[in-house]
Structure formats: structure tokens, C-alpha cells
Image (cartoon, rainbow, N blue to C red; front, side, top):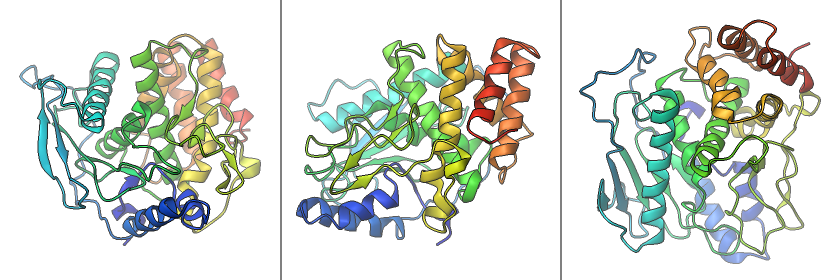
Amino acid sequence: MTPTDRVRSVVPPYLLRAVAEARAFPRAASAARTALASLDTVQRPKHEHRARPQGVSGTVDRSPQRTISDAHGSTTLPGTAVRHEGDPDSGDAAVDEAYTGLGATHAFWLDVFGRVSIDGAGLPLDATVHYGQDYDNAYWDGSRMVFGDGDGEVFNRFTIAVDVIGHELAHGVTQYTADLTYQGQSGALNESISDVFGSLVAQYAAHQTADQASWLIGEGLFTAAVRGVALRSMRAPGTAYDDPVLGKDPQPATMAGYVDTTEDAGGVHTNSGIPNHAFFLAATAIGGNVWDGAGAVWWDALTSDAVTASIDFAGFATVTVDAAAARFGADSSQHTAVQDAWRSVGVLD
């Protein structure tokens, strides 16, 4: 199976491997081994590459069109539909968190960028919860969100963090726009863009400005037994966790720490820390509501014809700098902030 065929999961393989070897957490270790194996066996459905969005017809249904299904601990998808669009709370926390998170993500894309669902044309939002036994991950498979319940020792249920839901659905947005190849630097950009817009979904839902945001990805996923606050930190990559059993967050913040590896499709979850930090620096330098500043620039870049599927960090950085100049004016404070951010992380000279 090629990296492009694999599902887009939120927990990176390096962290699952650490959990799988953790004798202190036997239940979690077993669950992590299962989750690791699934990365090589669960395949994305083939999708037809879609054209970049050109606007949608006024006849497109602009409601989220959510359907939440329950796998009842099996790995058979989609499971049993248990909550549809407009239904009241089910009383099942995972079902209702998934429903709310899909709604928050849909509202962000529609309100901020006028995009109707992740494909820009009203694609129904489908999710499955209670997938597998103690399943330690959440993933986008090309057509639906899938959430595990976690093992209870290391990971809580994966519907608990709205930024994780936003992250995974942003993989769908990338699929329908730039369709970045999931390998090497373009793959790390794919992961970073999901972190960027996952964070913005959470910020928008909480009415937070750049200064108020936590800039953490997956906050709340770790149980109290883990010395860590989240899976990743955009503010300070490499500091999200430092646990005697699981090890230390390996993400670099700058190109000086870039990791050359064949693991994880060329380090897509590791090296994404570099563009993540560049976005954080640009966003906080611009300030205010991030979706109006750096977020708008990154969206302009993602939907630009200048972004090819195999683009590298420097190429994407250049497109964002040009996008900032086009949106806010050459030599504007926003333009300067984006340039300085990429220079600070060593991507641009």
C-alpha cells in the first residue's frame, strides 16, 4: 500500500509505536498495536480528483447533512445510523460530540470562506463512532470520519477534541483542492494544513483570537496518566508531551531540526511542526481573528493554481507570501508577517 492509499489519521505512527511498547499500560499497548496494524490494512476509497472550487449553485443544500453511525465495537463501516441531521441529542457522548464537531466544522467553512461542506458542493458529512475495541485513533478515509473510543489508559475517546474533528475533515478539504501528495514535504504540508484549519475550527467555535488560542492539537486526548497536554503544539513544536513511558514529542519547529526518514511517509507527522510553527508566528504577528488574517492567506494559497500536488515547503511558503501581498497589499503588515514567519523557521532566506 502506498502512502497515498493510507487513511489520514490523527495519531502518528511514532506515538502509537511508543504506546505499543509501554509495559506500564498493557491495555493501551494492545490497543496501539491494533491501531498500528490498521494503518497498513485500512485503505482509502479511491476518489476522483475534483476541480478547484468555482463557487456553488444557490440550489445546494447549505445545512451540514450529518449522519452519525455506531460501529458497536466492530471494524465494519459504516455501522448503524443512530443520529441524523436535526435529530435531538442521543445521550451517547461520542455520538453527540461527533455530531456537534461536524456541525462546528461545517459552520466554520461556510461562514468564513463560503464553502458548503468540505467539497464546496454540499457533500453530506458522515461519521462512525465506537469503531473497533479500544481503538486508538481517528481518521478520514476519503469519504467519512471514523472515531475510536481510546483505550482509557493513554487515550480518551477521540470525539472529545473538536480540533481533531476539524483536522480530519480538513484532509477532505485538501483532497478536494490541492490534493497534496501524502509523502515527504508535500505530505507534511498536508498534515500541517489539517492542523491549521483544525485549530481554526476550534478557535472559531470558541470565539478566540490569536492571543487567546491554546495552539494545541488534540488537547484532552491524553488521560491524566500521561505527562502531556496534547498531540502537538503549534506554538512550541516538540513540547506537547514529555512522558517517561511514551517519550518526548519529536516535532521540530525549524528546518534546523528537519528529520530525514522513510518512516511515516517521510515524516509527515513530524516535519509538519515546521509549517505549523510558521503559521503560528504569522497568525500571532497579525493578531485578531486568525481566520481573517493568516487563515485567509493559507486558504488563498491552498486554492491557488500555484500549489501543485508535490509542492515543497519553500514553494508553499512563496505562494503564501504572494497570497498575503495579493490580499492585503505588498509590504503590508500581514505580508511582512508571513514573510518573517517563514524566515524564522528557516524555510525562506
